[in-house]
Image (cartoon, rainbow, N blue to C red; front, side, top):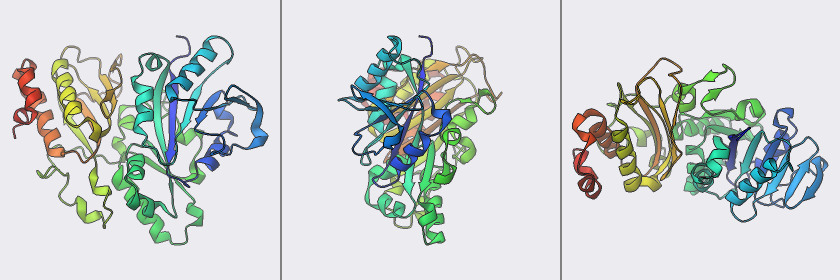
Length: 372
């Protein structure tokens, strides 16, 4: 389909984080022309009335060419309607979609709608997750609501709003450090720095370099744990993790870490590893990104992207963009035993005979193959 896939960005953040203010500012940016903004209810998000040009069937045409839509029923229906409008000529061009979630929402179902629907996956691609955090109430919100922690954990971009109103600079810096700890792979910005240029184009393609940038997409430059051996065996991640937690009871439930294997891996081994991981702990796998060197075709990296039990159809790139081969998976998990994941990954990547195991035995007792 010409013009597809269309990038979709998910804008989330807890109640009062400032999504309305940010949306209004973004909609004035010429870079967001031909953008559809999907919001839950127009009454909840007060888009400036001066921008509104006309409205019909839940679609509001803004004066700069943007569109706003309410979610009528399921998000899938709204996205499908946008595709239909584009294909029938009722929309001239659609360059981007921004989906704003409710403040209480777990972003995972929204991401799954974009990544899993058989028709929509051809028309749309997930560009990134943007999470707003209130600099004044952020620490209290993260303490009280695990949903807020999950919103931070799955983000590609974290926007700190109301930082100019925070009276205690130490508290604001402590919040920034906490956000970096929950999600070391995300870029953290003050709201004053938030623009189309800084919030969007989070995917594999880096518009600044006009090339595929695997390291940037995986968030590795921001400090993920690369050393497969640098972990304790308690299943809860690093032994000192709780020391930095300062009583934030939800934070220690989140782990972001990398699985690395040098050399090619058979596709069957990766496929079974992912199947077992998702079947045993899928709800705890908040997000996963990965680049894999396949034994069957080592010259073309396989890119995978998953949310909980949903895996976006894997895509092979035409060539390795940065010269660094091997397999790199970045996982963000909630209450998942990290040691189990590492042992399972090691079992499938380090044992040649693992290509043809007794699948029924593995599924009934996956811990056995993990060496437990």
